[in-house]
Length: 517
Image (cartoon, rainbow, N blue to C red; front, side):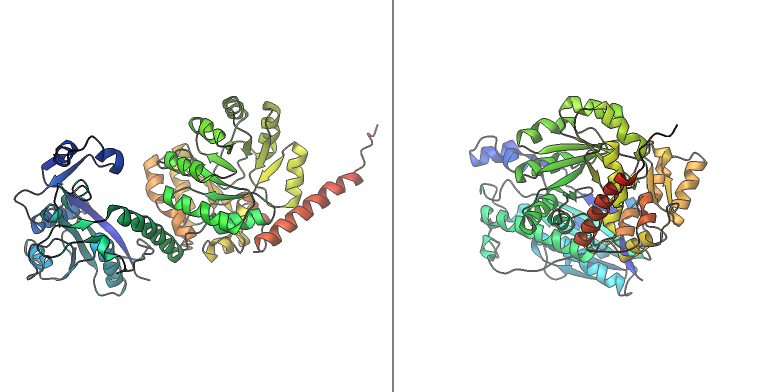
C-alpha cells in the first residue's frame, strides 16, 4: 500500500518587525493586543514579494530534509502579485526544475488543502515527491488602522516536502468549503481586507472542532474516548477519557460528547509530563467532570484548583512512599498499579504493591495491573482495595475502536507473550511481543542509548492502534492479555466481571477455616 509522509519542513520570515506598541499607537488603544490574541509582533515584507519568500521557505525545507529534488509543486496563496503567470511557475523557475505545478487560493485552509492534494497525488502513484509552499504578503491588503484586522496579520512563508512511503505517515485528512457567511471576511479587488472578528472567531472554533473530529474518525483514533468512557459508566463502572497525546480542544469536545451519552459519573486521565497537561487540566476544570486520574508524574500543582471545583484527584502510584507523599498533598485516593500492567510500568507486582500502599495511607486505594477477571477483582478486595482499574481487558471490547489486529493479538496472547523494553530510558514499557519489541530488547541488552529507543519507537503506538502494523506497532498490553478470550460489548463484560466477582467472594464461605494441629 502507498502512503505519503513529510520529509522536510522549512520557513521564512522577513527581517522587518512591527511590535504591538506601534499598532496600538496607530489605533489609539492601550496594551490589549497580546492579552486578547497572544500576538507580540508581526513580520512585514519590505521589498520582497510572495515568490521571494516562497523560494526561501522551500529551500529551507529542502536543506532541513536533506532533499535535492522534487517532481511537483503546489503553492497556496491569497496574495499573489501576479495572476498570470501563476506563482508556482515563478517559484519553480528559481530551482531550474522541469516539473508540474499548480496554484491554489483557499483562504486560511489553503496550506492544509495543498497537503490533501499532494497526499492524493502521491497515493495514486502519479508523483514520488511534492513540494508545498504557503506564502502570503497580507500587509499589502491590510489597513493597520482597522482594529478588526490590523493587529492580526503579517507576512511570511512556510514549506514542506512530502514523499511516497511504504509505511503510514499522513493517516487521515478532512476538508470542506462553506460559502455561507462569506461577508464576515472578504477582500474585494482594490480594497482592504474587511472582517467581522466575532463572527469569524465563532466559525473558526466550530470548524476546527469539526475538522479534528472528522479527521480522527477517518483515522480511527478512538481509543478511550467518549464512546468507550460513556459505555463503561452506563454499565455501572467509572469511564475514563484518555487525554494522552491529545490537545485541549479535543478533550473539551470529548467531555461534552460523553455528557450527551451518559448522565453517570466519568473522568479524564492526564499524563503529567506532557506539554499540554496544564491546558488540559484547565479545560477539565471549566467543563467539570467527577474525577481526574494522573499518570507519569507528580500532579501536586493541580490538586488545589481541582478540589476547589469539587473534582476528585486520583493519581497512579508505583510505591508506598509516593502514595504517602501524595496523601499529604490532599489527593482523594490513589491507584496502586503493579508491574503486570501494560504501557509504562513500575518494579513491584500488584500482589505486593496493593497491600503495601494500603498499609501506608489512610485514603482509599484502587488496585491495578494485570486485572482482567472477576476472580482477580475479588482478590483485590481481599487485599484491601476499594476498587480496581482495568485497561487491557477493555481494549478487547466492541466499543473500543482500535484496529482489529490489536484486539486479535490480545486474543491470541498467552501470559508470557509480553515483553518489557526501554529500560535504558528509565521508563520501561510492557507490550505484546513482535519484531519491534525484539529490536527494542536488544538495545536494552547491550546497554544502548535512550535516543535509540525513542527513534525506533517513534509513532509505534499509533502504528498499532490505527494501522494494526504487526511488525512495527507497539501493542501495549498487560500480562492479563493471556486471560482474554472474547470481544464482548462493554455491558456484557461488566456483567460477567461482577457476576464472577460475587461468585468468587461467595465461594470463600466454603473454605475450611479450621486450624489443623
